[in-house]
Amino acid sequence: QVRLVESGGGLVQAGGSLRLSCAASGTAVSIWPMGWYRQTPGAQRELVASISSERVTTHADSVKGRFTISRDNVKNTVSLQMNSLKPEDTGVYYCNIRGTTTWGQGTQVTVSS
Image 1 (spheres, helix red, strand yellow):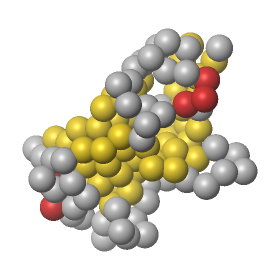
Image 2 (cartoon, rainbow, N blue to C red; image 1 turned 30 degrees about the horizontal axis):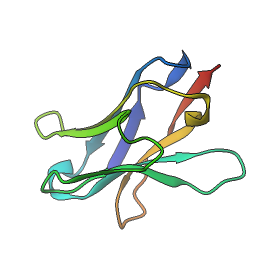
Image 3 (cartoon, helix red, strand yellow; image 1 turned 30 degrees about the vertical axis):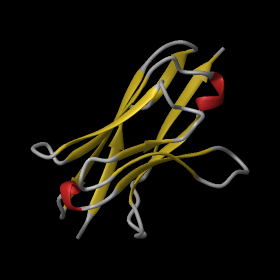
Image 4 (tube, one colour; image 1 turned 90 degrees about the vertical axis):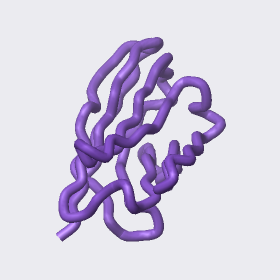
């Protein structure tokens, strides 16, 4: 059974940093395109960043230059380094194997002004 578990969320002041981690079991993250999504109340989940099996990355315009997605094949994790956080980055962040219905439970990020 494939499982994704996110961690690393929390409360941080604007301008601060957090590092989110998505640990996978039952599969290898290296063979899948992976994504980090963000959801705020009343809104759909939006793709924040993605990384392909070839390590090609994409980042939403709203986070370019501040967030970086990466993958550790040994630890079987996908991470999202978030710097210069803004209040509008607040939301629940989810890890996903792109193109599938495999999601983690989410981790809350709250950025105070």
